[in-house]
Each structure stands twice: as structure tokens, then as C-alpha cells.
Amino acid sequence: MLLIIVACMMRVPPPYVELHRVLRCYAAAVLCELAWRRSCRHAPHGGSYARWRHLALPAFMLGDLLLARNHIVRARLEATLGPSRGAAHHFLMLILASRMLTNWMVWFLCHRLVYALPAQLIIIAHHIQANSESCGIMLSAAPSAAAWVHNVSTVVELSQLGAIGAVAHSRPLTPAEQCRTVLAWQQLCFSLAAPALVAAVVEIRLWRRHQAEQRQSGLPAEGGWQPSFYRVLQELLLGHDWPHIVVLSWLLSGVLYLAAVALSVDA
Image 1 (tube, rainbow, N blue to C red):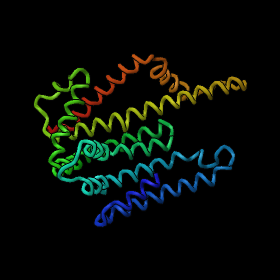
Image 2: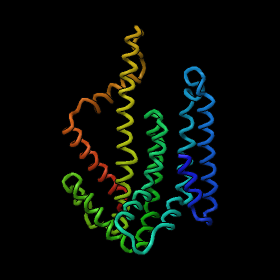
Image 3: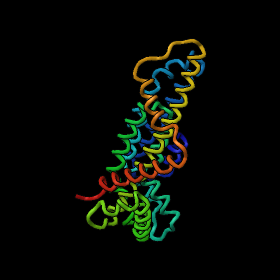
Image 4: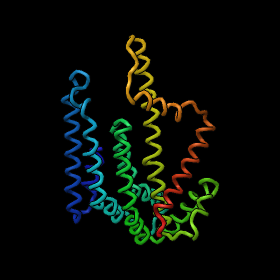
């Protein structure tokens, strides 16, 4: 994460003074957490970092929101978009404009799902609000981007729920709406839903291992809300075979596409 921040500081154009300040603050937050981890490395059970590390999550969430508010994606798009670009370049621009990399960095902090999910929802909501600006820059700076976004939007639409999304709106989507829909679908699927499911499965398996170790040690079962929470997650997420997983993933993707359309279409 620190390397990405430093790379952004070096590549952001000089006129974005406020963005440089936010990047420096974000880098300072990363360095502080690394120092905190190092100081607690040899403490029993992880020391204060193990007990209070979730308090660092709002700091990274705030840093991400400040980066988005200070046009980091706009700066990168303006620096890289040109009049004629290929499909690979437009694909990379969609990934950049969706801001999914910032969500992944927060996921890679490996906080517990009950703490990370609310923070990710706030970040996603803020990113969806910024999609209009990103799409405006992409469509105006590169004439070929509109046709490419239209093709991507058509493929995504026809692959979701048997093209039910095509009849979910009463009129054809404008290029700007198509762009916002694709970005919102990327954000909901690949920045929120998919990482959350992976994190939930990992936590369930860790919880099962923890329960097995407790039984082997002769300790009583834990009470409270956590056992019930993980049992519900286990029943929902584990125990499915691969055909069921594929079908359920497709249905979830379709539902998220309908949500993306609802969030992106002008009234």
C-alpha cells in the first residue's frame, strides 16, 4: 500500500496541491500502523495492536474518502487518456475509474468482517457518487471510449439474469448512464460482494478451527452473538457444490447489476 501511495505522489500532476497533501497524510497513517505493528510484534498475544487494531480502519477509510474527494482518479485519467486508445487501455481506465484498488487495499488490512463491511459500504457509497465525474472525463477525453463502454455495458447487461436488466428500464441508457452502470456494477461486485464473501469464508474456517481447539483443550463453548453469527454464515456459504456456487454467484451478480442500474440511471 505504501508503494502505491508513493507512486501516486510521484505521478500526480503538480497542480493538484491538495491531493499531494492528502497522499502525504495517508502515507503517514500507513507508516504509523507499521510502526505500531512492529512495536507490538513481541508483546504477549500481539499487545495493544491485537486489541485495538480495528481502530485504524476508520483512519484508512477517511484517507480513501479524502483521496476520492480530492480527485485522485480525475488526475490519473487526465494524465493518461488520449484521443486514440486501444481496448486494453480503456479496460484499465475502467478499473481505475471504479476505484476498486482502494477497496482492495482496505480489504487486505484483514480486519474482521463485522468491522470492515460497514467501512466498505461507506467507501462504496462515496465512490458511486463520484462515478459521474469519472465517466464525464472518460467520455469527453477519448472519443473511442464511448463505443467501447457501450459494448462492455451491452455484454454485462445481456449476461445478467437472462437479460432481465434490459427491461428493467423503460428507455435505452445514455452513454453516461451506461458508463456509470458499469462502474457501479464493478464496485458492487468486485469491490464489495466478492471480497466480502471471501473474507466471510476465511473467518468461518478460522472460527471452526478455533472451536476445535477449544474442544480439544476441554474448554466450554463460547457464548454470545459470535457463535450464532458464524453458524448462520456457515449454513449460507459453506456446504454448496460447485454448480450451486456458480448459479448463486450469477444470481447475485444479476441482482447487483439491477442495483447498479437503479443507482446510475437519471430520474
